[in-house]
Amino acid sequence: MTVRSIVLASVLIVSGSPAVSGHHSVPKEYDVNKVVVLAGVIASSQLVNPHVTLDLENQNQGSERGPWRIEMAAPNALTRRQIDLSDQLAAGRRVTIEGWPALDGSRRLNGRILVTSAGARLDIGDNFNPMNATLPVR
Image (cartoon, rainbow, N blue to C red; front, top):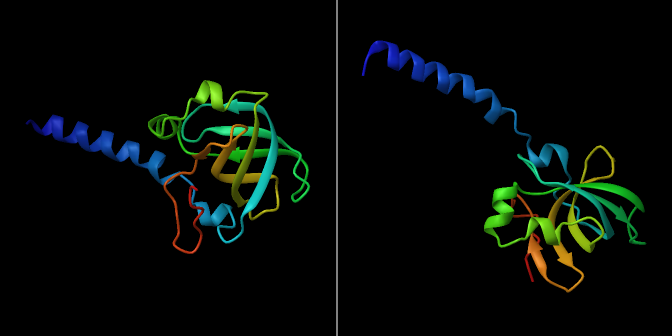
């Protein structure tokens, strides 16, 4: 390996670092000690990295009604869990979502479990799972 190759490899490694460090911390954005349950119709879904997001029109009496933004795991992670993104997360689907609410009080939720209208419980969370804030898949 030449010196030029080593320098080039070093530059590529260092230049890729900001993307990794730019990822947010779940406990800094969401209240991992509080679970909110939303139920309603999916208005739209964005199947992009780093997180799939859903816009849900919440109709659940037990939480603030209206539009909510749900953040989930990456598209590849959901696909590996056998979740059909184009079908199960399609606009118009009625779902129930359990997750952690945003600390800033906005209508954002870090989704952990999605329950389909057929009753299937799907793990939609990222890999963050503190010991004191678990939502088991039943």
